[in-house]
Amino acid sequence: SEALRAALESRMKEGQPLGLTAMPVDEAVRVMQEVIGKGANYPDPRYPLVRTTQAGHGVRLAKPANVVIIFVEALDRRFLGRDIEGVQVTPFLDRLREDSVYFENFFSNGVQTARGLFASLCSYYPRQGHSAMKYLYVHDYLCLPSLLRAGGYRTEMVISEDGDLNRLRLFVARNGLDRLFDMTDFPPEVKQVGSGASLGKPDGALLDLVRTRIESLQATEQPWFLSTMTLGTHHPFAVPVQNPSITALKSHPDGYPAALRYLDQELERFFTDLLREGLLENTMVFILGDHGRHEVVGRHELEQQVGHFMAPLLIWMDESLRTPETFRPRSVTAVASQVDLVPTIVAMNGLMPRVSPFLGRDLSCVLTRDCLDDNFAFLASVYDDLIGLADRDGLLLYSLRTGKLREADLKAEKAVDLPSIDDPISAPRYRRLLALYVSSNMILSRNAIWSWQDLGGAL
Figure (spheres, rainbow, N blue to C red):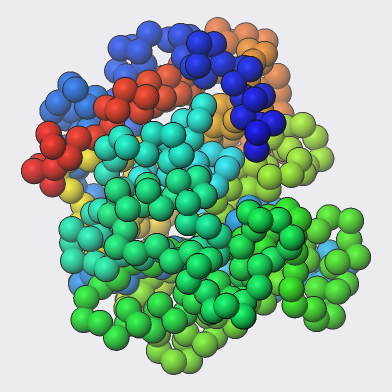
């Protein structure tokens, strides 16, 4: 981590990420308002992305549902539905996909855990330099736990690592979480994974603790939100349980498939137990990666870079919530990303605020029909000093270091180097990309995303 920090700082000018002077901030904000707002009203110039909420046409539940978000460390959609060494790597997730709404073109907005959690819980793009969760945790944000708690929810998170990692405990405490359970809350007989002091408890033990919390929360009379974050698919891919499938996969030079197979096995046990005991009644479950693979994986450079963002999303709903008007399991092709989670969850549960700074959109219409073909995802990689835009036209990727602009399809299989940023065909998309990058970074750095003092009453 220190080597990465030093490398990032060496690429900054006067402590700022590269490329922030490529477009005047005022111009970038105007363009970004057009892109994200689509005609919305921006009532307070001090907080230039806060806008009035427009009525949506998605799914609205009859009463607030319980919400479970499972962040799987480095879950890469390229490894779902695959056989390696003659073994199906994710048999349970593959079956669950058939009973869920699965997003074929979902992307993480960043490439590290702190950035993925920030985007997913606060519907805002991760900063290109130091992560907001770790370095800007005293700023004001409008995040999912705060909104749910204001709506009467109990809000909790369970992780198997140290709660102070990436200053997570401070960040979630300031942003609406009632309780964070970490490695100190596990039974003493549960041993740490691996030998590193920074590693935590096995994924199986983590899911056992999550199950215990769900059992306790279901016994209350209020709706609840529970998030968790797995660990085992992070290097060094320690796998505490052996079975023939995992043993076969461990012979592969890449340790990720064996770790993923173990996680899939534990998820199956977790879901089976919860369903058998009726503990998912009135509950919606979101499963996604905090990002794609950390490791450089892909057939060529472009796929290796984009692979860091290729995290899947599955949305599953309990039978008690399913009607023809609320849920239809299927795969959807609409582009989506982590910032879309918050507006989707709060809108479905009738808690969308009158004004918000959310950079994502309510995805709930896709639970029953094709829609949102104009949605997009903004991508930012601190590994490659890379920013990108994914939309129905494919991928547009720009290197902040080299100035190289490239286009590719959404699966990153075919790429074309563009001769110039002034190319008449790609110039409008490049302008949008640059505006999203400049404005979101500058507004975050200036603590101008949100203000509880000035705007909290407008909720």
